[in-house]
Amino acid sequence: MGMVGRIGGNMPIPEYVRRQIVRLLYDNDLAGLYRSYRWGSDLWEDGFPDIARLEHEVSEAARNGRLSLSQALDVAEWGGIRDRTRIRCSEPIRIILYIDGKPAPWLMSKADEIVHILETWVRGFGPTYSSKFLRFAVPQVYGAIDTRLVRVFGSGDPGMQRYRLLDLEATRFDTRWAVLASQRSWPKEYATWIAILRAIADALNQNEVRCPHPERLTRAGLRADGIWAAADVEMALFSYATGVLEGRY
Image 1 (cartoon, rainbow, N blue to C red):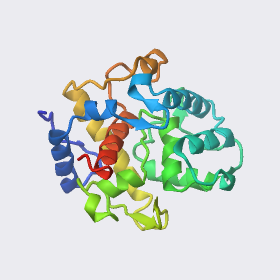
Image 2: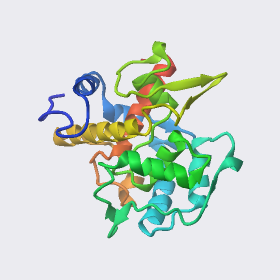
Image 3: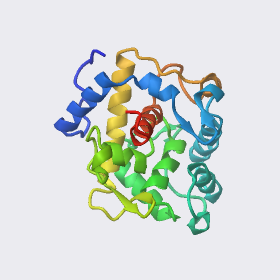
Image 4: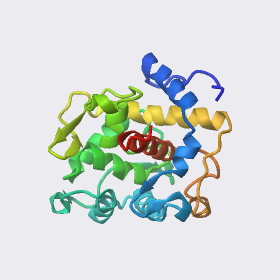
């Protein structure tokens, strides 16, 4: 794929990460990876029904300043959190994500502050679930970060690392993994991750590589047909990471 311009433009992405992004784009078919995304009941062939439902509900609540425990629990259930009883928050969750119905202009530049604010509001949400919540609240700007992505694009699992994009570490506890908020690079590296997703989306859109959105998403007004959003790129990278962990890549 021929790159247009410099990957990431003026975004705060280290030069070695820009080179890794270019290599990733040359090596992989992100549209194909997006189509192969699967999580629970969400399959491309079925139109990603749970994702569509949650994006509609959570983004609508965010626009109206009515984010609540109910949406936090819905996202937690979708993600398969181990213990929902730990999740607590005051309502409404006071975080401004939209201005006049559009994503607030500071969401990119202050992504690390936004995710930190959300963590303080929603007890029981660490990095993974705070980022998932933001992903459903503003999918045009934000994508999730979880242990699969960190094991493949960060550190903590050397045998699974492929493209080193992040200075984040996944930690193993018996049979499960976690992304700990106590590590020095959090939440700064969340901002890096969001810049990476935006840079990849911009490169794909500029090169007219269409995102194969299911009709359900475009019909509901959740996506502009064929235009990559940050959450779409995250889904494609999640599919790649899943393939690495399953031994397919």
